[in-house]
Image 1 (cartoon, rainbow, N blue to C red):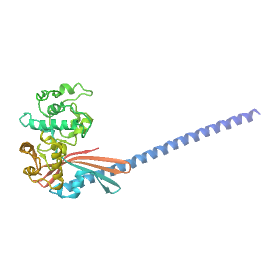
Image 2: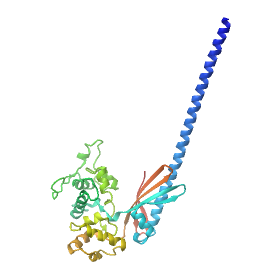
Image 3: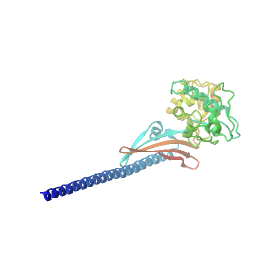
Length: 329
């Protein structure tokens, strides 16, 4: 009887061991299966992300081809659509969405001082007027301090002296490394021209909200001349304190119907007085040499997206399009 009980206990122990082994093997197999599925998903996502990147590159090539193949963006309806809104194209297994912004119609914040280190009062006043227009609330809700202007000057000039703009009553001081070094994390004032508009986010007072307000109206490329054929309405209004909204809109309407061939054609716009004309003439152009374009190309495959941001320069004299900035994100 005792032998039988002992044998039953041994059989029960073996059964428990077998069950434990079965459970252990099941857990191992489930883990292996889960890991395999995850690996397959990772591989599939990597494949799709590479396809999305290729779609974005295809979009950039479309933009380059469109820009290089046309002497004037206004004469080509396809390119004009790319300039005015986002366009989506089918590419292989995905799509690419492209937007192009002409940079020569914006205010160049790298040129608030001239090559001799002297304040360029004309461009500074234009930027201050643009800030006033943005703060009026007709276009954007965020408030922008005037100190943004001297802060940009201090970031882009080559000295360590804090800029004070005496002709501004309030918020008239900039910032150098003594300010940025106290931030968390600390960093230095670059004291060089901005390479991209995104670098403005490092400048004192330029919060993401302020940058979002200003980004469509400022640039860091070009010779500082505002191309009136591409300038948005707010930039046109900022060119002169006497430029009122309806007058700027008439210039916009003329842009769309027939681009200006020369600055003198502004005289044919009703309401353009001599004082407005001569104020605009100093800082405006209609030239096409050295055009800059800000291109955003988004590649989409499934749920994955890859974006390429590039700045293209159309070198008319050399007859080619140069990539000034290229960034994948």
